[in-house]
Image: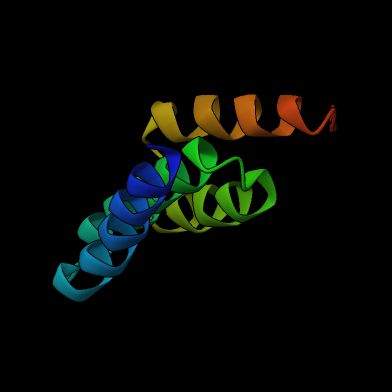
Length: 78
């Protein structure tokens, strides 16, 4: 079951990159990739994607929240 979920999230990662066009859409793409990586317990990768999402659209507070949760999993309190 975990392998099926991993394949689903990886396909989600691959598919979202193809359809992004504007900065806001790109921000959403990186946000969604961060969520998928977080579910795969790739917290460092999730943080990188959340950082890129924030760079493209700094007004969306959900990204900051999720990045903080990923950092908490790594015990990175900076």
